[in-house]
Amino acid sequence: MGAQPSDLADWTAVELVSAYRRRDVSPVEATQAVLTRIETFDSAVNAYCVLDSSFALAEAQKSENRWQAGQPAGPVDGVPASVKDLLLTRGWPTRRGSKSIDPDQDWAVDSPCVARLRESGAVLVGKTTTPELGWKGVTDNPLTGVTRNPWDPTRTSGGSSGGAAAAVAAGMGPLAMGTDGGGSVRIPGSFCGVVGFKATYGTVPIYPPSPFGTLAHVGPLTTTVDDAALVLDVVTGPDSRDWSALASPSASFRSGLDTSLAGLRVAYSPDLGFAVVDPEVAAAVERAVGILADLGAHVEKVDPGFDDPVWAFECLWFAGAAKATEHLTEQQRSELDPALARACELGREFSAQDYLEANARRMNLGVAMGAFHEQYDLLVTPTMPIVAFEAGVEVPEGWTGRGWTSWTPFTYPFNLTQQPAITVPCGFSASGLPIGLQIVGPRHADVRVLNAAKTYEDATEWWKRRPVLL
Image (tube, rainbow, N blue to C red; front, side, top):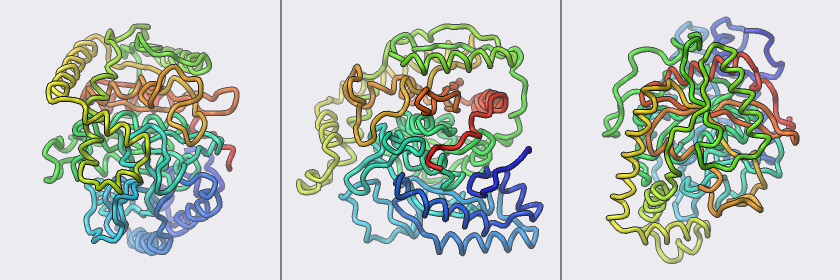
């Protein structure tokens, strides 16, 4: 396992569980270390919108008792974890970053992934921030303000799982559950230098259904790929409330993580044929692809051959936003994120025929990617074309397009196709900001994606670097 960090807040979930099993470390000690980290640094980052220290410590004590009795509840028993504030969490309000949601309700239901974390003994510390209704690729909202990047608090953490990624990067909990409807675990994963994984659609069940339909996935943000696989072993499998959930996996997601990359056919697309990429990002990703080749993969530079599907994505996404806000009063609408309000107006302008056309383009893209993956086992791209930019704005100054979709060309196509996709750190800019490598696989090839990501991670160990905030 190698030398471990001196501060328990910087330990991975896998390291913590191994230490609990040896009785070298207690869940109470680990949870207190995370709470101390939150108390020390979250005022600069704003990753948490709900923090329940007394509950977390009580749950950690229960976990410690189970470990002492040799009866852990599950694979993540005693590991501090957070939940994005789009996911229902029993006992805590789920306000989705919106003033329109009344916190004074009977919050008695867990989303499926939250229920499974509880059942496995995870120590839920609190809820992490999101843009209002999770609608955009940066994290700020009228309710909780701006969430910042631990590597440079003047920069954005990304979004919409920006609080989750910032928390993991800063050691404010090694496990975080996020959502990804257009890149929302991969965007902040790249900007904050952590792992964000979107499994094949339906692998992680969802409830309540997302207003953004089958674009929306639930996935983990973690320090390492092994931790992401560990979480997936807990949260996957069908739930009766999700009509589109897949069957339970036949094996552990961790079981295939040490497979050699020898002979793996990898397509490397530096720009998907249409994206504008910062030279620093392009160079870091090029070096990462060279390492994959050194590890035995057969790498070929090739584009998958589709045009930018942004119109189809925005039609489905903005229509979903309009649907999610259709019940609001005029007073409530006046309190929305102004950019969200404009997106809802655009969503209401799409016709039923537009929506069907967007779905048709989506299906054609899925067919094309299915054919592409008959020739290539994986597709590798930058996760983001740029590094994290100024916090509190939707689009960086001087960028080539308007709206958050203009700078996320590598992420939303694979929500349309529902393919598994992961981001792992692959370097840093001259200014010290993380750069992400995206690995995409065909539907249901989740373990293949995880394996390639872990093999690269093990060969580089970028994940061991800690934010300057610390």
